[in-house]
Image 1 (cartoon, helix red, strand yellow):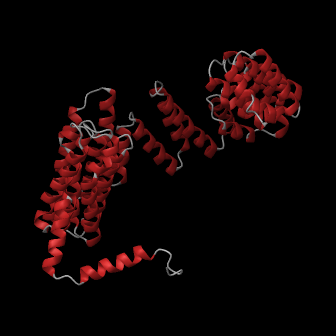
Image 2 (image 1 turned 180 degrees about the vertical axis):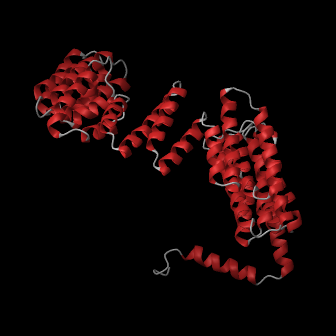
Image 3 (image 1 turned 120 degrees about the vertical axis):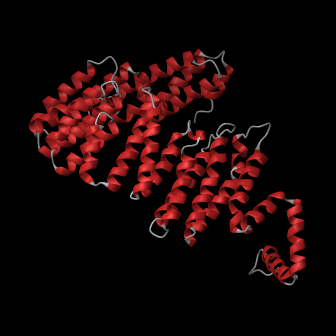
Length: 466
């Protein structure tokens, strides 16, 4: 063996294979490929797809995609282990579509990516897509179509653009997206890029109005209506400019997505009072939706900041703090002079203590302000918390921390009934040893050994503590 080449076999094999193939005539190479394809049908399908004439590539792609999907089925279903195998044909097709984009063959790229979407979205009806691979392929197809359309618009003639527009619209309106409408709207969003062409805009707007008329007043259809309205807005923005778009936003202000757009517009204009009113109206209109209310309050706080309204900032920061937003505690603290803060802090702590249950933001405040006495009181009422909080209080309250640990460990030992729970108790003891020292922990272990001497599994786990 040559010491400078510790693995000569693989390298020489690579060279030998290349040399061997280079020395074969055309007929022999064809025979080699046909023999390999006969043994492995997948190779045959991939070669046929890769080198098929352009006029047949869509048909060939559909066959390859379908063959991959059918080959991965087991009793009509594709489990999560075989989803990757099922998507091989789709992925090869999208790779080819991406190559077409890079070559400037945009029509072929769009049509290949569109060919992927129907069979793949239908897979969701008979596959376990736990790892999200089907969604990834669908999103890849959407991105490829969008990229191809963006690049092709200035380079294709009207007839060619219309052909692609019609193909995308036709696919978007198919029934297999009824349960997966995000992909429908993604395709329609791409189609809005054609809307500067008057005839295509009219056709698209008619389709959107038709979809809108089918949506009822249910929660799910509210989402559908909003997506359609956003597409209508996109057309107006592309074709009509800022003023008509703003009017459309305010006509649809009852939709939270449009309210947020209106807030952004007024923020950009510097009309912070209007922002505040939009937020207050939103809080009233969306009072059933906690997430939206929180969003409008955050925007309102930004407006108060930009207006320099300190008193309103104080009120709202305190309100948001008590909704478990610790960042507003830090903002609130900055709004007070240092000589006033202790009074405010004591009132905040007192108000949290009046609650039946103190949220995590309360503990964050105690740690931030090093309020060790309050942290100790909390631990005494919530003994499990000593595991996380002891580092903050042990310097001032070693004896009390020791007592809480013992209480927690004794309680856990009484509740433990199997080896898994015994190990949990021992894990707590290890933390106790780290916190309070070996002498205290060994004394407690001895007491537990005596108390639970008839639980050999527990005694064995206690013996593992080092």
